[in-house]
Structure formats: C-alpha cells, structure tokens
Image 1 (cartoon, rainbow over the protein chains, first blue to last red):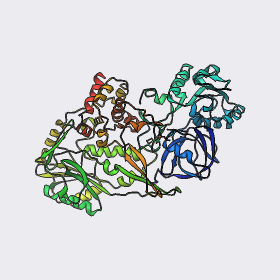
Image 2: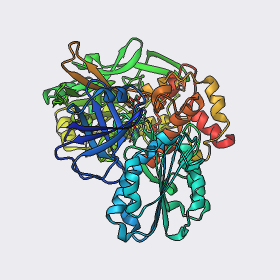
Image 3: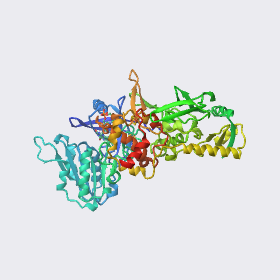
Length: 269
Length: 359
Ligand SMILES: Cc1cc2nc3c(=O)[nH]c(=O)nc-3n(C[C@H](O)[C@H](O)[C@H](O)COP(=O)(O)OP(=O)(O)OC[C@H]3O[C@@H](n4cnc5c(N)ncnc54)[C@H](O)[C@@H]3O)c2cc1C
Ligand code: SF4
Ligand code: FES
C-alpha cells in the first residue's frame, strides 16, 4: 500500500501576476494524472506545509494554479520564482459534472477567486462548444482589479461564452455593471428545465446564487456548488474539512445542492 | 469455534504464547491510579483484582474480587494504531522523499466490546471506506490479534447496549474470555485463536459453567443504565442544528477537548513540518487534533466555528448523526470515556436525550 502523502516534484515554469495578491503558477509535473474541472491539488512548499488549491486550467502541458496570498504557506509560495520546485499531489475531489449535461444550457457563476475553479469548466465547454446549449458566465469581484484572467475574456466570448461582469465597488475607468453577482441574472434568459447552474465563490455569494437559481426554477439536483473548508490531508483522514455528513476533500468540493440542502447556509457548521 | 474452561492461573501462559508468536502484547495495567493500555512483558504486569468507579467527571480504582472487574481507563486502542504522533514522510529540500513505515504485530489483550467496535470504525475511516488507503494505519493494523474480555462489571458511564457494541464480544475477536468465579470460559473464533487456545490447559465446560456465565451476563446487562435512543437519531439530530440547547451546553463546556482525546474513535489530526536544525530535512508529522480548538476550522485565519456552541454541536453531531452519513455507522461505541473524563461532567447521553425531548 502506497503512502498517500507522497509528493511529485513540480517545477515552477512560469509565474503570472494577476493582481497585487494573486498569482498564477504554471507547473511542470511529470506523469501527472488526468483531472477534471473543479478538482484540486495539494501544493507543498518545503518545510512550510501544504495547501489545497484548485486546478485553474484544463491545459495539460503545464498544471495551472491561481493562488491568493493569505497566510503562512501562500506567503512562502510567493517567495518562490521560476525555476524553483514545489511538491504536488492530486488530483483530489469531485468535479463539476459537465459531461452529464450535454445539450443543456449552462450558467456559471463565480465570485472573486472562485473564478479559478470555474475557468476549467469554461475551457472544457469551449473545447466541446457544439454539444452544449447557451453558456452564461457571471463573474463578480470586489473591484475591477479583483477580476481575474482579463486576458482570456476575448477568447471566451469568441468561444461562445456569454460573459457578464460586475464589481461591488467601481474604480476609475470602469464602465461595466456595479452590484452583487446575483443582479446579473436580469440579463440572463433561462429555460429552467434544461439549465444547470455551477458556482464557486464565498459562501454567502453561493447562498444567494442558489436561492436565485431555485427561484428561477432550476431543480435542486441541477445546481452545483464548490465548498471550501480547512484542509490538512485531502485524503479523508484528518477530519478538518468536515462539512456536516460530508468530507469536502473526498465527497466534495463539488456538491449538488440537493446533497447538502439540510446543512448548507447553517451558521458555523 | 473451540471452547474451553481454563483454570485461572493458566491465563498467564496466554501472554507467553502470544509473545512466542512474535506479538507485541498490549494489555490493561494499573498506572498512576488508572487503568491504561500499555505494552507488557508478562502477565504479572496486567491489571488484576481491580474494580473501577466511574461517573460524570469521576474515576477511582479500588480492589475487587474479580480479576477483570474493571472496564477501561482514559486511553484506548487508537493510541497504538493511530498514535498521538506519527511520522508521515521525510522530505529533503530537493523534494526527494522517504517513508519510514512503522510496522507492528500487536496482540491486544483484555479489550472490551466497545474497543473492538472502535477498531472496526477506525478501519472504515482509514482503509475500508476510504479511497485513499492509509499506509501508516494499515502497517500497524494488519496483524492485530485480539483477546477480548466480556464485561461482568460495566461502569456506570457505559452505554454499549444502546450502541449495539457490547458488553459481549463473541464472534468479534480472535479469542473471548468470560471470567467465572473459579475459571475462565474461553472461546476461539479464528484459526489462529484456536491454535493458541489449544496451547492452554483446560477442560470441556459443563452445564453449570454455562449457567454461571448466563447469570453474570444478565447481571452485566441489567447494570447498564445509561441509554441513547438510536432509532432515527441521525435525522432527528439534524433537525436540531438551530436548537437553543447548544448555547446552554456551551456555558458549561470548556472546549478543552478531553472528550475527543479519550474517545476511541476520534481520529482528527493536524500535519506539521518538523524541520531539522540545519534545515536539511523536514519530517512531516501528524498529531492528534480536536474539533474543540478554535483554529481547527479556520479558513484563511478566520475560525469557521468560533462559538463553543458550534464546536460542541460538531462533536456531538459527528458521533451521532454525521458519522452515519459519512460511514454508514455511528461514530460512538458507548464506552462512556467522554462522560468520565469531562472535567465539568457533561454527559453526552443526557445531552442527546435533552435535545430529543425539548431541544
Ligand atoms: C478545495 C479548495 C480549493 C481551493 N482553491 C484555491 C485556489 O484555487 N486558490 C487559492 O488561492 N486558494 C484556494 N483555496 C484556499 C487555500 O487553500 C487557502 O487560502 C490556503 O490554504 C491558505 O493557506 P496559508 O497557509 O497561506 O494560510 P493560513 O491562514 O496561514 O493557513 C494555515 C493552514 O490552514 C489551512 N487553511 C487555511 N485556509 C484554508 C482554506 N481556505 N481552505 C483550506 N484550508 C485552509 C491550510 O492547511 C493552511 O496551510 C482552496 C481551498 C479549498 C478547500
Ligand atoms: S464536553 Fe467536557 S471534555 Fe468535552 S470539550 Fe467540553 S468541557 Fe472538555
Ligand atoms: S482534508 Fe483531511 S479529511 Fe478532508
């Protein structure tokens, strides 16, 4: 039986600055397993520790992660440069089940850094654009600089994604929508019986988005959320990521709303 | 199944037979005024002629007539199979890695029905119901041999009958012992158990021995007074997530985590890097952690369960509700350790009862 904590070596091939505290790390990893949109990896910085980070692109030549600097491990990760190595293990967790919804319309909703988890879905859909109906992508951020992957938007629109953006607080030069992400639904026409919703972002944002989607007539089983909890192991044994009767690392992070309805939105759970 | 009536003084040979087969024998001993599972070299070290008094926040041992008239103290088998500290992997700055798996061949002597149940539950967590098998737990678990003792003197804190885990152990271990007044009635349930029992002097039990065993069993069962009503419990508790009782319990709970430490199924851990002084190697360790710690649930520095009420709710619901969703079984074995070792005497069976009746 293999040790589940063994890491692969990942060469930091490229670092791209997205904004003042968010960077994309492009990693070269030999023999990295197949992965699906919504899955995550554990990234290890020598002697500092491991953090769970979503895979933020479907590209296979390099493994892409988008990381926000928040605490101990991410701080040390940000000290590393192109040519340095980190450890990686994964992929872990459930994925957004896009393959089950061919022929359907798709609404993707992302808040802030949550777009990192949604971007692989966007890329997956663009690759197979003809087998899906309309695809909406609703993105919200605190301010314009919080909108990630700006360089990709043109490509996404050309790929048949109906992209809608909003910010809570505008800055100079911003002429787009101002307000919370759920307000963007007024620009979206849905056929609820053949539409699936997928989202990632802060829990409050997902709470209101779910409410909105239900109100628009989507069924509980066709709404998918990406949950976040403290994680230490990613292999179902440290207990930290428990979310009620689930483990976010192995039963999630992607859950249908139906699966978590009794526990979702309960404070401090 | 092989069964034998073994004279009391013969039992010491059992430990020797296990040692001859290469087992590291772990058995209850008396240490610092409590019963503890520890590695033993010979039968003379095993706790004998001891009884316990256990109540909410109370534990004392005293002399007793029976050899095994006690149940258990604060530690449990998880201390051996999922130790408080385990080395997971060693890593060098160039990220080369080495795994030093600690292998053991444990024989657990004197374990109870609740202890056996806790092994099955930990097996689910680390191996059986986990797609990522835990090599470290497995290396300690694979060769385990169990010698169980049927409880004749349950503690006042026991509620194994409610959880369906005790007090009898037939069919759940390699060997099972019932202590009669003058002898031991021993049964073997596995091939290796039979081989070992063959090696012990004894005779065929008589009707009067079975009669005595029945009386002792009835007395044991009727001595267990604490109850948890398992019927529909996971769902019923899920309906109590917003109960005002959580806040009430939180006024008493110190969030010390003693209950989780002594719980034979609580498995949570944190992972830390232990770096050598010269920085040339980092040893990744797992260390027990408890959900009562505020930082346990922190995401980017902000605790998710900041109130004690939410942390007590997490602990109680995990045992009696969430666990069933996660693993198909309750996470509580009814051993009562958490009741005895809670410094403020919070009794989980009482709290479940109150939540169901008026929470
Ligand atoms: C499934 C999943 C996907 C994620 N994807 C991304 C991503 O794509 N980009 C990104 O920047 N962040 C992501 N996060 C959050 C990221 O894991 C945390 O920001 C990171 O662990 C913080 O680590 P730190 O040591 O810098 O912070 P500290 O606050 O110092 O954290 C200390 C430790 O606590 C734990 N921890 C703290 N915050 C979190 C958290 N939010 N989630 C899980 N464990 C935490 C980790 O074990 C961490 O090492 C994801 C989290 C999860 C659960
Ligand atoms: S219930 Fe008792 S033992 Fe458990 S954390 Fe609270 S005070 Fe400590
Ligand atoms: S992260 Fe350890 S159990 Fe999920």
